[in-house]
Amino acid sequence: MTFDNTILLILKQKSNAEFNELFSIISNRYMNSASANAALSRSLKNLESLGKIKREGSRIFITDKGLASIHIEMKEKLVLRLNEIINKPIQKIDEVVQLLIVLTERANESPDLLQNARENSLFTIKTISDLQEKLDERQEFLGKMNSLLGMQEERLRELNFNDERVFDFNEELIRKIVLFSGVEKISMDIRTKEVIEKIPELFKKEDLFFVDNEFKEKVLKIVLSEPLAELTIYIPKMRIAVQRGRANCFAPFQTIKQFEEI
Image (cartoon, rainbow, N blue to C red):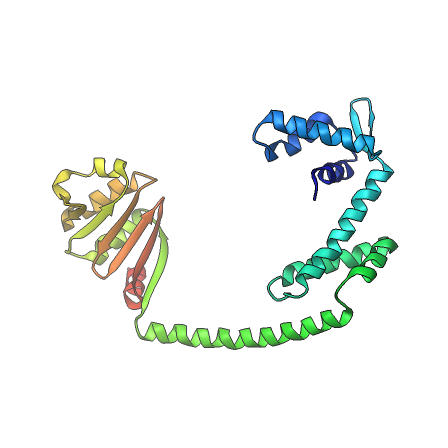
C-alpha cells in the first residue's frame, strides 16, 4: 500500500485527525522527525490537490472521493492476494480462510466488490471444495504421523534416550542438585563476570570451577544471587544450562525422572 493510501486509511478509521495526530502515527517509519514531517506534508498536499481530503480548520477529513479510492484499492488487493495464495493453500490456509471471510462479508455490503471478485478471481467454488478434500487427506495423514510419533516417543523412553526439562533456577533446584550429586564434586563453566568475581579462586582450575560437596550449596546460592547469571553446571550424568533465572537440564530419561522425584 502506498503512503498516500496509508494516510487515507488512517483518516477513514479515525473519521478525521490533526496533522500532529497523523505525524505521531507515521513518524516511526522514518529515521528522523524531519523526514517524517516532509513525507506527511507532501502526501497531504497531493491528496488535497486530488480532492481526496479536505481541511476544516486544523482538522483533516477524508472526502467521498478519498473513500472511494481506498475502497477500490482494498478490494483489488483482497482479490489479488487470494489469487496469489490459492495455488499454495496448505501453507497459507489460515490466510486463505481469513481473506475468504473478509470477501464474503464485504460482498454482502458492496455489490461492486462482488463484481470485481467475479471478474478477476482465479478461483471458483470448486477450488474451495477441492481444498477441503486436500485438508481432509492432510488431517488423516497428520493423525497417522501423530500416532507414530507417540509410539516412537514411548520407545525412546524405554531406551532411556536423552531428555530435557526446564526449571526455575531457585533454592528448590539447588536443593535437588546438592542431593542428586551426592558426595561428588560439581563443576561449573561460568560466563558471567559478576558471578566469577563472587566465587573464591580456590575453586577455580583452568576455565572451570570445581566445588566439593561441603561447599556446593553455598556456591550455588552465590550464583542464585546474580539474576542475569549464565553458566553450565555439570553433575553426574546431567548437564544444566542456566540463563537468566531458568535452568535447562539435559540427561537420559531415567536420570531426569530420578532428578524430578527428589
